[in-house]
Length: 482
Image (tube, rainbow, N blue to C red):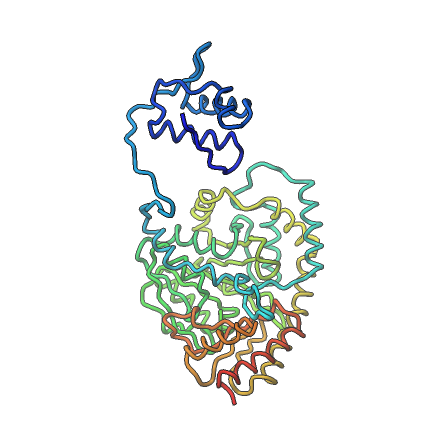
């Protein structure tokens, strides 16, 4: 009998695969005796113990059976029609669900923050973390402490009670949101919040409203789940409530710092938005992605603080306030939706990482989180100042810069030029080691003005100055300024 080992992994695993293939392809017929372990070991140049281990495993899986004093024999597995084997380079064509087809159509991992910076001298991509050695040290201490006290059972799917209590305390003081721990659901981040909302609130074909421009990840999630996604116009004051459709199941809004324009939704529009949702029995998701960082006074109260009808689902994430690798966030749910969202979360992953939840709860309870926020705000303010100064100094009047005095990015609209010219500028800058990112992917069919989304969290002020000097050179080289 010819046995061909494929060279992948341990010898006994190679032998198991080779014998299984021979049996399934009927090259070893049912009832036939396999070679003695000593003989096969000599033939293949491997140890006898390796052959014995492979035979034992195949007997345990039912491929072989042993007869005392006679050896091992191929088990009768029934009629097995021989299927043609795939040739090298062939791929198995698997039928996909409608969800999988839509997910493949909308996903683009290349746009994930951090994935495009390799090989660049300077990267102005939004979403890169604020590097903070003090935070890294503090987090190691918190993880070590949590490990010493950890319970290694399955987590509470709703989230660690201690963390939910800290979230409620924080939101009441910093965001004007009064919530009970029973209404808080700990999640793995904003993307999971949108996925859970899709499962709980939407049937195929129902309408979801997004601001235009908007956070692209929301459009991807809702589209993948089969929703009809519509854009609603944004102006200098944020979403325009009069442009909302007469019927929609859900609207996703960023009232405290519109993404990506930076606009702040005024009180009158907030009230109008809430009235629209109540009249149509629609839900509002308030994505408060970086509301903590305002450089002109205290952060503004959240839309959720005005919600008296239980129509607002508030979501927060620690990806911006701490670091993206943490993968923790939270939802504050209307009481009427709590059971459904908790059930959906339990079915999806049985709960988020308990160890990191415990570390975060203690970090917040001891004041470490808010001390970090104060230090981060100081650093971001210095970086924002460097970016504004660098734009004025090096880019002339090429851009109209929107400064909302908040957040971790600026939007710079191209005063004259097309989307194509903006993309050409970004491509030219990349060749020179500068990462630039256009607003176009965040809008429906390039409906927004041509412009750049300039993130400043990932670079210190000196590097931001150098990056904008290089941007000015790229503008001149592409003919966008003289």
